[in-house]
Image (cartoon, rainbow, N blue to C red; front, side, top):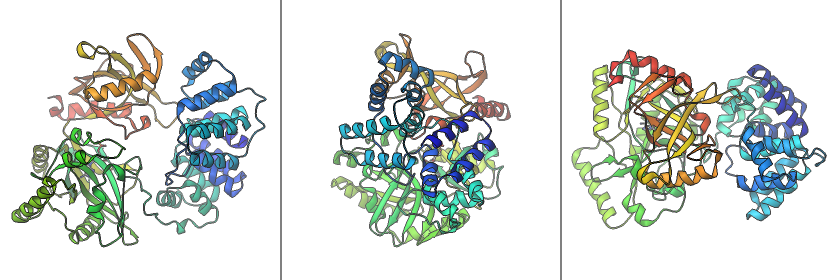
Length: 578
Ligand code: AMP
């Protein structure tokens, strides 16, 4: 583990990507195959391979207490150290007594992680963590804690680990990326790469692939400027989900690759009858069966995140799965096929199912809705799989019309997709574009909070937020404030957030608290100005919080580059200034 930790120190010490990957490649080659495989997982900031559902489930508070105990430091000393780095791993490295542990092996650390994950009850877990950390040297403890908190902070993205694997085992980066994407296991990718067997990597059904993401466009003209033929769909405001289906077994995964099937117990049934194994991409929305329309995201949010859903909730907030892509069918991975072929296969697959098509004739639609309503009235929770309707537009005017119609149906806007493009998991490119109601929104990180006024006097409801200056995956990136907004959240959300902020305060300034930069918000605004009011050099006009984005990590928030892009485009399209 000492060599691993030293390699991490060296990686953190350089900002050059080439140098980082060279250090990782040399390190991997210097280890046994098993050690290299486990190291690759750890270097990606994970305790376990991505596809596994295993988690350590040890709270930050418990870890903090163990560090305090083993270092024999006071709470005040630890807090001071934590304020300096905001990283418990770094704190452990700093405060652990030098002659404490003998040192441990990387494979032993992995074994301990497995025992911690398998242990039931916090007391046993704490005992195991204490045992692991007391064996470690301070430098080892630093990185063990960092892995446990899920963040190495050495400026090393998983993509750089992939590059290093390519270098270490002399294979192409594309082969490494493909194997890692299919397996969701960078450790197994190392094993295959070392044995020149990357071609054997196969997709694991029920282990989610990355999601293809979209880039924002500011106008209809821009939306039609990137490719020849566009498939246009409504942008539904719900929860992105990937459904894996095999016979009667159906599971849904979120963008964060969590299994969310439990939260939508009525959905699997709707897909269980598919004639073939498949992976579908789509959006779960709250659905109004009487009108055949999506309901606002805020309605869907009424359903609890992870807990068991009550029958009442199932009846009051029925959902539908709006499907727009097919990634795998019948043993074949389809992501390299162009969208128009995937779409055709999706239509064929769903035609075999009894689904409510937007394209149904009016009598068909009525009959189907009646059946669904009947079920709802009888208290039978029931959900549908619906093929998202696909439109075409020959001109910017036609696209504008579709945009207005989509909004009229209560949807957020449009998705404009290149029909000739492959599906690129985990990538945000220009093959999928999104055109939203708000001219632009930014995903920002909350950096400070203040108590509100009037009925919000006792709660932390005013948020100062920031975007990244620099690449958020590197050490050099820092958050620069860009605005402040009164919460557009519900009272319940504000109350919950207040609790969180109180517990995650870095600096208490009385009426204002500097908080851990972990919460991501989506903010809308009317336009943007250059201003020295905030550190970023920009200010937003009429900023408002659209929603919390618990599905995004702080690193996924927007950057100052994106801010500059929006600012530059304002002039280009005067409608932005409305
Ligand atoms: P955003 O979350 O603003 O980055 O927008 C992208 C998201 O829009 C995707 O991750 C999906 O959750 C959602 N979405 C809604 N409708 C569609 C659609 N027809 N095609 C693709 N994504 C969609």
